[in-house]
Image (cartoon, rainbow over all chains, first blue to last red; front, side, top):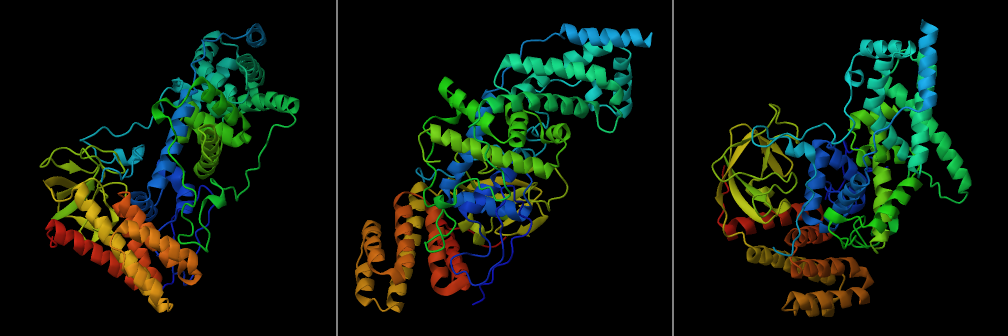
Length: 110
Length: 250
Length: 206
């Protein structure tokens, strides 16, 4: 049986996990990612920069791993919560010092 | 099938955008960012004109630029410090530096990038002062081997599914729609403040302020890939913080 | 050509969240280049089905230029056809169970190979998946040399019992691979595809 696993090319690694080739790993198919790999790919997934191959791997994983779906939901919830932190500042005015500096420029150029 | 949650990640904008004519392609403009005046989108010549006008102390040019940039400058500054008052100081100091130093703007970068470089510099000075006052605030390293989730959350090579969850994440109690009670908000803000600076800047601009990836790369002068790495690490840490707050083992 | 497509309840794309219109209405990709996985309509041939389970199964008619990708096909445009009514929660449960029983069978094989005949009999004597769950867990603790195959069988039973058909199928494929390598993995997936085709009366030609 030929169980040599191909290196997964084209997988962007935002999180620093290395997907390396190895041989004779009975517990891993050549064309799957693990949960540990998924969590490092999740940002690239949301950013839409995964290669077609990697995207396929991610989606196939998400079909059958509801835990990773939960994890992805948590990342999304985190992002949504961060958006809630945004506050519209009151309109501002330049300070006296700023206006003075501007005035100085005007005088110098006259 | 009722108990099979199925994949539910739906925020993948680019996929939604693929089917033109049936749905609206996702807008690439980020929501709510300060509307740019012509200066921001313009070619170098528009930047040069504005810079020249500022150099002459032109009040109208200044007023337009100030009015257009103030809100986003304030928000970016807020990303660096804890108080609104200090953020205001930073913005005003930045404008002072801009006016005094406008002769040094040579068009090598856009005016926007130049302005924000000054802003970030000012913000860092304040941030450094504040951090010295909090000697034990954690400044966690962001080394190249930083993991989003502790390795012990996954099965090791001796187990049935190496690399798969050993202790899977449990759904948080509150629906994501209304995650932030006042307390949770403070917790998240604190966690954001604890991020390493560059992660905090990227997460703040992307996720809090809603800037696009392109904008952030320009403002912070980082590559897209770097920006993604920082975004990834920042978000991962903040998820951990929120998970801890939600009572789950992060 | 006619292919198949899984959608979430309400005709929602499982990853895009895109809401598919009612059958007969064409949906077209934005770009001309359908090669990029991002653009284009995704669909399954019969042999691809085991990788893509979701709430609803539909026939989908694709326009002529179809690209074959890993475990799916891509087209520039598609429209939903008949809903496969046989794909119900009950059917998905039966599928999950069928897969879990096969994972159980692999564990029995593993026990036989490691000369644990009594344990193999005990596992073979289980008549419900809940019994499998309990028995496999006990045996896994007692027999370290077959622990992993037994854990896998237990996992398959658990996932079938908790209504996770895609995972149960994944587990069964891995149980096969553990014993007999990649060829067995592929064969197991093929078995799963045939199960779906037969149970649902699907067409297997384009």
